[in-house]
Amino acid sequence: MTAPLPFAAILAPRNSAIDALLADFAADLQRQGYQVRGLIQQSHCQDAQCLYSLRDLASGELYPISQDLGPLSQSCRLDPAGMASAAAVLRRALDQGADLVIVNRFGGLEAQGEGFAQEIGALLSLGLPVLTVVSPDHQAAWQHYSGGLGSALPALPEAWATWFAGLPARDAGMPSGVPGPADLR
Image (cartoon, rainbow, N blue to C red; front, side):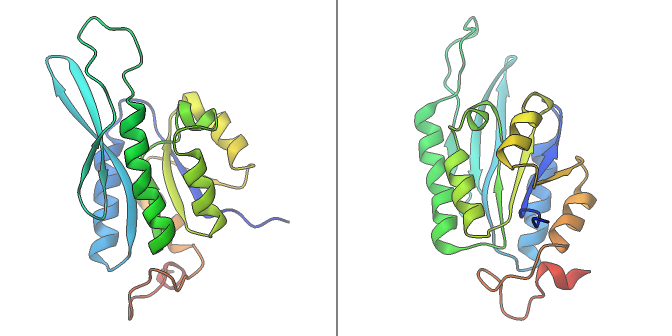
């Protein structure tokens, strides 16, 4: 039997408050001394129009990922240049290590092998745990991408903490004197 990947998807509907919950979860782990890296989505809404940015969990830097195409536009507002810039955050996690890497979404681009799909694969190949959010529209693609070996989690921080606590202990990225995830059981 193949061991499960350290890859979990939070199954959350579109337009849920998942980003704030995920940011709080990451901050809690960081306060405990864990090296949590990656990207969390933030929205900036004004006059019924929302623009999105990704926040680097290590530095706080914002990467705008949506283009303002005007209120009448029906086109995809995702900014490929912003996504490419934000991908550098995930590549730094590859170089620096982490106890957990959060990738804001496994969405349409990742379902097509684009977006952050390459970075997620590289993180997993190094054994770095990855936590992401998947909407119902992309759950089948995420299952295919993970080969059915990823963990599907409800949109409940307690479930994420249980998943994280069950991960094998890692030396890379672990602060000295802080128990590994498996030690939290």
